[in-house]
Amino acid sequence: MANTLGIKTWDYAEFYVGSARMAAYWFSRALGLRITGYAGPETGVRDRMSFYLTSSEIKIVVTSALQPSTYDIWGWVQKHGDGVKRWAIQVEDVDKAYRFALSNGAVFERSPHMLKDDNGYIVEAAMKIYDDTELVLINYDNYKGLFRPGFKEPHQKMRLNFNAGGLKHFDHIVGNVRTNEMNQWANYFNKTMDFETFLDFGPGDISTKYSALLSKVVRSKDDLIKMPINEPYDGIAKSQIEEYIEHYHGAGIQHIALYTDNILDSIEALRDNGIEFLAVPDTYYEELKKKNINMKEDIDELKRLRILCDASMGSGGYLLQLFTKPIGDRPTFFFEVIQRVNGAQGFGQGNFQALFEAIEQDQALRGSLMRT
Ligand code: FE2
Image (cartoon, rainbow, N blue to C red):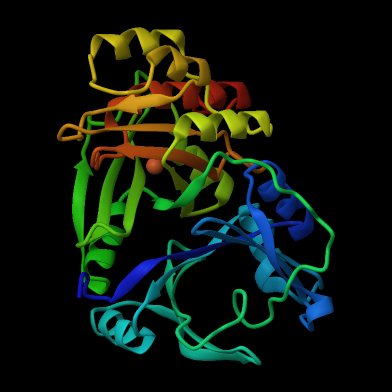
């Protein structure tokens, strides 16, 4: 077995939002995902509405509450704003993975259980992580439906086949936590899921003139699942992590990185679809030219689309990446688009400075950079 938990692949990420129908439109029209499934009153689900969207191996669900009694959803959205409630990984055997995690100290929100319909059954269990977030272990071996029980073909005539330039799958999912929580969570994942700490950015590694943060990357030992965890660190101004925690009202998912094998096409398409990205200054590309990275992309093309490049952990390879602005109303969740060339393994550490300065410019505009 490639990893102790029997992890096969990433599965879905589910967002809780104010209006699932409107969020589905954004994910489809802007991010280029296809509306593949639907659950709501027309499919026998009375208290909530969900749309299931896909592109290649990317699976995203957006869910909203339909009743005041559906407090688990609207109470969550009221507190955190639109964001990631849970994300899932497929495992070979949910019971086995559950028993391993539980015996190593994991806290479960739901123990393994079956969900059935005419297409068979799925098995899933949910670990409680980052305040109000869940990490779901799931298995579809005995299910033939389009996603999971409750979901049917969408009856809505939303024909929205917009181009997203070939986004493929999740690359990593990042959590933001409070000061002194990062090590606890890294140890928790390493112990309960038999993960390992892959990268550790300590004091001074990630800082700008104004603010700083600490970050650890934990991953499954076969490098399939990568989960960076950030916490704020002392600085003269408020770090982006502090801003997140203030507006999200706690710890939670900061970003999901979407993998593409042609970032030039992806960013071009996403920009055309109206997605806003962080502003990268011209000076970044002057510095990039001096680094003489052996890459096939033209630096002027990267500059035109404001794509970042980093070879600091490439062992011959390099990665290309760019971050959207927060996708909702609060300065919390955003997406990253990433391409790894020739086995680059990092997370863009060579770009942190430029990136965080760009984030700080936006923080300053929101009036939440300097401490009040
Ligand atoms: Fe990232």
